[in-house]
Image (cartoon, rainbow, N blue to C red; front, side, top):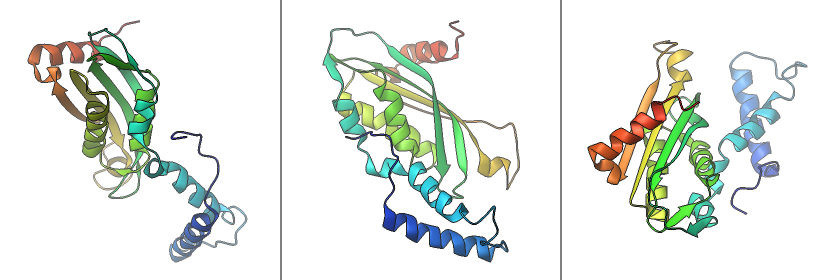
Length: 198
């Protein structure tokens, strides 16, 4: 199955990565035999496999598994989708939320599949710009809607914990295809994702 919960780890990969983490921790000046650190290399090896499991999942297959014929042709929005990823430059987290909209063209997709493909692409070494376009193009190419829009807002630990150390900055990226390239459709989408619907 393309999106089973990832609970089993490749033993060889775990051992290889664990040994590399041992070397890194030692080189940084820590004692890997210390009680609190002793199991850290293995935990870190498993964590990295979990955080990069998207390399082994097929987002197009996930979408195709729940596509249904339907004549609905107005905008569908799933907003505030939590996402967590690793910046490929420093391997530090960036996290935030994604907003996705599409206009069906004879087919709709199960709503849960949109957050699932966000996870598939986010659980890889990423930059936010590519993540936005990965999600956008996957939906556009697989579902073939009349239009698709993706906006991601995220905070980057590589800017917060190190480097420029700006704690309150948020990065926004967006992508639009089809009818969302028209200003009126794009404006409606942006208004709906920023509106308080409560």
